Length: 194
Image (cartoon, rainbow, N blue to C red; front, side, top):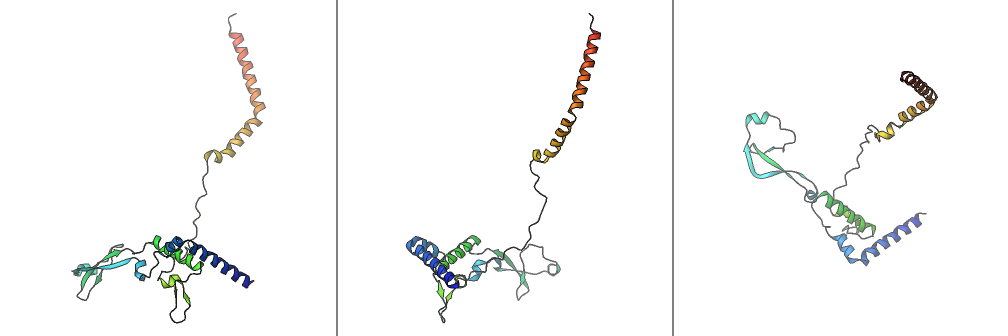
């Protein structure tokens, strides 16, 4: 059973590598953008603004910083250094594309790099310094109110009950109508000047 699974996996890898090799553009497309970058390129953070330092006031030292404001740090002279927000050099979309390319190459059996001493293949994510993917959210789905639906569908049971009640009372209604018509006819006959 295990040998059969291994044979299937190697067959799939061979097919993937044949597809990539048959279309050089596809292989080039898979290899573009794959380069070793420092880990800092993938993260956004606060960085100090060079050359900007202001002496700290005694009253400002005791006050608490406003939430969401840039953090301040003190240098060795006791001066506050301003910080600015630095975006990641590689966007999340580009990072996802790189991960997909690495996975495609690994499925095809193409190793991007190997360990210099042992010769064992290194994973593409490890070689390219890719950060680990974000964990899947563990939040539970909040169950709210059920969908209201269409008003015609919501009020259907009331309408059906009303119609059923009217049908059940129909003989009484018809009898009352006949009596009122007969009474009108009697009144009109007696009031005519003939």
